[in-house]
Length: 278
Image 1 (tube, rainbow, N blue to C red):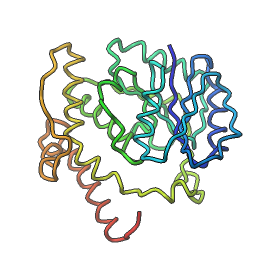
Image 2 (cartoon, rainbow, N blue to C red; image 1 turned 90 degrees about the vertical axis):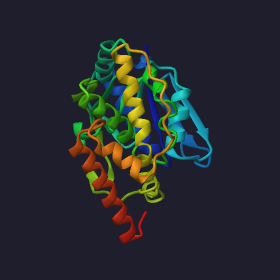
Image 3 (cartoon, one colour; image 1 turned 90 degrees about the horizontal axis):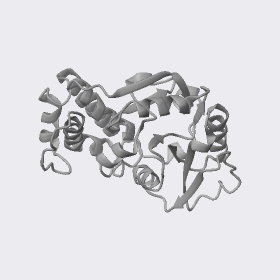
């Protein structure tokens, strides 16, 4: 059994090197850790990077949306456990891999979502989601549609829905610390990787794909309960009214949570219009 760490990175070889070193220094079973290092073919800054893990696959391709890059990385990985992570992270807890293996083995059907403690969002949002390869297959082409944001929010919302519907498959590993050194936390000036990103590019994708998340929630419930799957067709993306109704009908997520999500997305839209910023 292996853990596949999916690591997209751009123009941050020093950060990627530090993260990989911290992973190696704190894991118990380095031979069971597979690193999928995802870089852009117009970025030659990683030629000197030295991964401490024997199982390292560096994949360089054309520059695309982050979701598409991560999706390809998952498809080319081989571990039973998928761990989506960032380069601006430091693994701090010895034996973190033992904790992931233990939780994975406790869910025979492979339907779970776990996360380490990023020392920022904590359990409010599973910023570095960990899930089974089987779940990856059940979620279709996730996270292919996203350019860079809402990847963690997409899968987290599905499992929040499961919890609301009486099937809690979320495991927050408070004691497993992976410090996220995001510039908003450290106070550092954001680098070009952040500056080049359109921070609002995925808002509509996330909002309009709520039907896909609801369908995923429905499907996972049937699998957990060992019931036949329903052959229901869901439109790829919903319009404003249809998507809003999913959040407000009180069946997919709690009504209060649905309202909060809608207000949050509306506030982001207003800010984008008012600031003209990316």
